[in-house]
Image (cartoon, rainbow, N blue to C red; front, side, top):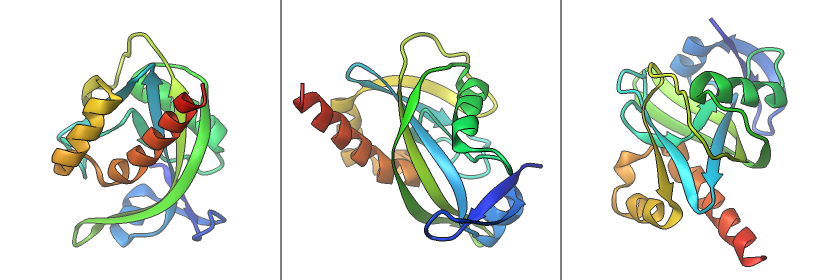
Length: 174
């Protein structure tokens, strides 16, 4: 079982804990979310319905936790390859802390580092993690998020608008 890196509110490492225990006790831990774009489209995944939380909801291309002793620079490409079967350069955009409760004893309390990468091509995704992958235009995604927020994971609803704004600002600079 992987150990998660526990942090304080400023992402300073304060210990480790098993993934199941950290989520059961609602302990703040380090995580990352990767957004992948190709032109004016974003790759989103529908989490497998059997996931222990947020199953069947749409989320960013890849999200996970660095393992004990692993840096984000090591964890992000590892997980992109494991989950999506892709490699691409990424850069960190921002980070944020969020808390979501899914059951009496199931919490997500994460210090989430958000990365952005660009990729075009096929994905050989892990079907035990992902039910469906979809490329969606930024405009259609924004409309879906406005009209159907319940279809998306809690962290995606926090991070995606910020990512989309950064992408819009970048395109207006061209």
